[in-house]
Length: 420
Image (tube, rainbow, N blue to C red):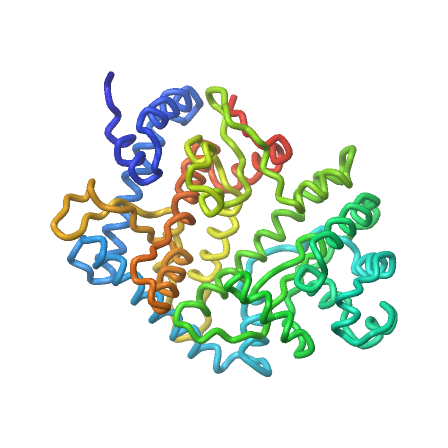
């Protein structure tokens, strides 16, 4: 059987059988404009890698050297970002970071649950552990002293899983489109009274950022982690959340126009991934989680797929990389189109094909830097890049980023996109 050279290279980067890509290329080439997409992706990937390494004055092409150069670049850019933060308005580093992220993120207003519904949920289902933590006898007493959004943000780290599941099923089953409204995405820093909660969050999640998609809120836990790489990693995550929330807002709006809105809303918030393990020719899975983190052997990792998370990361990293301010001695443009870029690099004299995938994605490299600084020198990350490369290929077949998003939103509940 004739082998397609680009499929051989891509298969190593994506960790799949070359035959899968050959069959995909053959099927997708039937589409208008679908010819030679994989070849163009490979050529663009190689071009960007060479251009990036030249820009970083890296003459060596070994895996260890390339990883080292990328780590050093993350470290330098983080220092530059922190230096700029000194002149940003805000009472502390966290407020400055929140304000700057709000300024940088290129997002529109969204479609979210009305704020007062958070109060109604708490009154219907009093969170006993939160009340005890706050020293309040009733929900009314707690709300008189504390912000309802911050109370809501703390629920998942103070209340039991049983309470959370029951509250979710009871409260969210009654929501209708009338309970939603258009408003801006909000970002806030949790107050000092939540410090112990914030510590638990950071210990569990290993970052200090989270969100409430249905309320359009991102919250920042004011726990400073001093390990190099963590600030840039988490700041990029802030920007990612802006785009994730905007995307889900579009899904909420679409679901509100149809039947079974409450059930669709709950499925979206649970992050349900359809149990689909077989695709017809021309079909692509929609997978809204990083399955490789849960099980590297998940069979869906060996199927054509598109991951909305990659779209959120791409947009967040692009916002950061292309943002510019006259007063900022900061240039992060290097990272603008590297989210999907990566390749096999050899080491110790080994040929490239015997090496490992090196990711050029900002978040992967920030995480690798953090692990390196924590003493895990041989822990490397590339799952953001791998999913982003699949998503980039899908985007090319879809006709660009905007068309890709449209297809995702229209087919999200099905879990599959079928190209006709």
